[in-house]
Image (cartoon, rainbow, N blue to C red; front, top):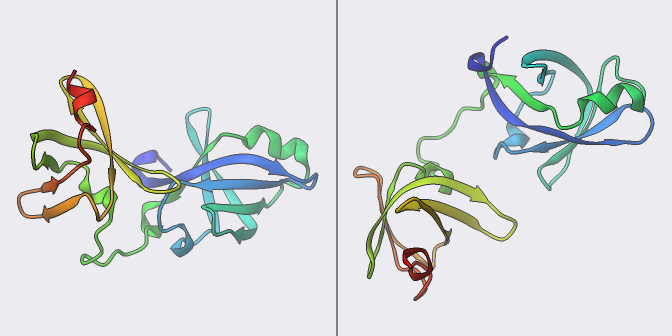
Length: 174
């Protein structure tokens, strides 16, 4: 299995207890829709299959996982901070009508009073909100994405029009 045949879902964040249970942190938004009979961990630049014995999904983007043949903390310890992948055929189908903030990567951000800011290069999910990053003259400008600041979105032209709080962009232009 190669990385091209898989998609990234998260990483092993810590061990739990003495019987080999680990906590997996998800960076994949629809983690509740995934099928976890086998996952692939990147170990020494190779994807190694691990068969899931039990998994307990949590609401905070984590799960507690027991893998087959990992029955002691000493066997689980080397798995810490390893990236976790699933095969591409396990990717959940997405309704084309569903639009998320992460879909805005690649869109041109235009601020009503400042004009064109640039292309959105990244959208991060923070605990309270989503944050967009735009490259302005070699500096990463970050601003919140929420309904109060979004004036309009044009999916055809890949443009988002914003009305950001006064002075927010000024600090990146100085």
